[in-house]
Each structure stands twice: as structure tokens, then as C-alpha cells.
Amino acid sequence: MENEHGRQRSCLVVGASGAIGSAVVRRLARKETTMGLHCFKNPGSVASLCRDLGIDANRGHIFQADLGSEKACSGLVAECRQALGSLDLLAICHGDVGWKGWRDLEWADWETIFRQHCLAAYTLATHALPSMIAAGFGRIVYLSSIAPKYAGSSRSIHYAAAKGALEIAMRGLAREVARTGVRINGVRAGFVMTPQQRTGRTEEEQEERIAKIPLGRAGKTNEIAAAFEYLMSDDADFITGEIITVAGGD
Ligand SMILES: NC(=O)c1ccc[n+]([C@@H]2O[C@H](COP(=O)([O-])OP(=O)(O)OC[C@H]3O[C@@H](n4cnc5c(N)ncnc54)[C@H](OP(=O)(O)O)[C@@H]3O)[C@@H](O)[C@H]2O)c1
Image 1 (spheres, rainbow, N blue to C red):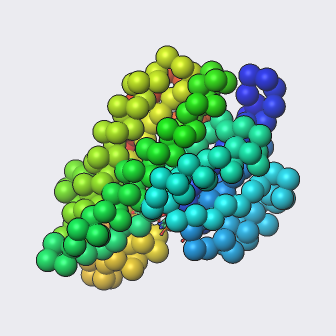
Image 2 (tube, helix red, strand yellow):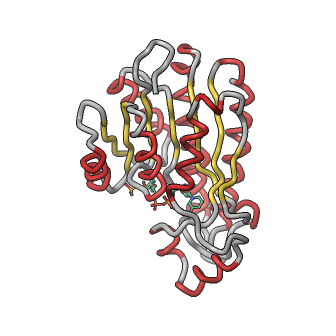
């Protein structure tokens, strides 16, 4: 994948150490993109992903950051742009659910989850935008969830609210910059069996959740990543401010 100047496109995958984020990396790496790979606590898993995919230090740069503050978000984009020389594609795939029932949810829990999902994604995007606008090209794709549709489960009301706010913020931003060559879209993932789901639900709850999916199974990380790859591609040039739901009919 090359940009209009004939050079490789450069990409930052936020949450590249995660189950869905690493599937996005696998997809984008096939396109010869130079990559910034973000993680929080697990740089080792990104390093081993790079080894697996044959991404050497010239092509892949690993960044570690807790994205709970504006400084961390702006710093990540700046560091990545400096290391790669440009930033054409931004995939935002990080974040935790922070499972807690309403009786235990405190102000600080709400704040953590809103910072991590809504504020971080919006801030990453706004810091990536100036150079994308100057280049007349950019693709930003973020990960949302079908959680807002159900207002979350009994232990994820705050998470569902944060993802709902995220969708509105990113859609608004997409419309603001629609005439600059930058496209901003989301992928609304359904239930995918990742560590986040395994730790947050009992086996019985996982089975109950899957039984509610019209297609009768959990999604696969690669199926979510496929939507990212499409929205990043030139084929999606006429799409902005949209959200593609990949949720087995849920
Ligand atoms: N799994 C599902 O069913 C599902 C459905 C819909 C939406 N999603 C969304 O998909 C995204 C990834 O989920 P996943 O299932 O792939 O989970 P995962 O495997 O647990 O990955 C979570 C990722 O977020 C990073 N992260 C966690 N806390 C962070 C923080 N404070 N600052 C920066 N990065 C942080 C982790 O980094 P380290 O590992 O390096 O610490 C990891 O890369 C989340 O936004 C989630 O809400 C998941």
C-alpha cells in the first residue's frame, strides 16, 4: 500500500498487544506498511508478534503508554510520527472493560474508562489529524462495541456509556474534516472470546452470551480485523463517519 508520493504508508496500531489489535497488525502488515505498535503492559507480546511476522526494527517501532491522559496520547502520536517520518493510518484498538456492578462503580472507575476509550481515542485522532490534513490523506479507524445497544451487561454500564460517547465524538470529528482527505470510521465489534471476556465473565455467562448471538457463535479477532483493513483501504474512500457492525447479527 503506497501513498500519493509512492512511499509506503505508515500506520500506528494502538493496542497492538491486544487480541483484536494484534489481528489488525497481522492484516495491515501484509500491505508492507511501516508500523508503530503500541502496548501498555505487554511489550513482549508485540515483540514476539513482530518476530512472527518478520517485522524488523526498521519497519516496526514499539511504543509503550498508559493512555489515560492527554499527555500520553499526544506523546504517543508525536513519537510515532517522528519514528516513522509520517502517519497515514491510525487504528485504535486498545482498552479494558473495567468490569464492575453498579453498586461498586465509583466516580474514579467511570473516569478511568471514559479516559481510556472516549477521551484517548478522540485525542489520538485530533493529534494525528494536522499532518494528515496537510498531506491531504489519512485513515482513522477505531474499535467500538455493540455494548451501547444493550446499555452494557450488569457489570459494564460505564464501558457501554464510554463506547456510545466515543461513537458520537468520532462521527462528529469525521464530519468536521470530511473535505480534507481524512476518513474516520469505526468498527462495532460483537462478542469475541478474548482475555477481556474470559476474565470478566464466568463460563456459564460466556455460554449464555453466545447463545444470544443470531449466528450462534462468538466472533473471531480476524473477522473484526478484516473490517479495519477494508476501512483503511482505498476501496472505502466514499465512507466516513460510519460504523460497521461485525457482530453475527447481534
Ligand atoms: N473482545 C470483545 O468481545 C470486544 C467486543 C467489542 C469491543 N471490544 C473492544 O476491543 C478493544 C480490545 O479488546 P480485546 O478484546 O482485544 O482485549 P485485550 O486482548 O485485553 O486487549 C486490550 C488492549 O488494550 C491495551 N490497554 C489496556 N489498558 C490500557 C491503557 N490504560 N492504556 C493503553 N492501552 C491499554 C492492552 O495493552 P497491554 O496488553 O499491553 O497491557 C491491550 O493491547 C477494546 O476497546 C474493547 O473494548 C472487544
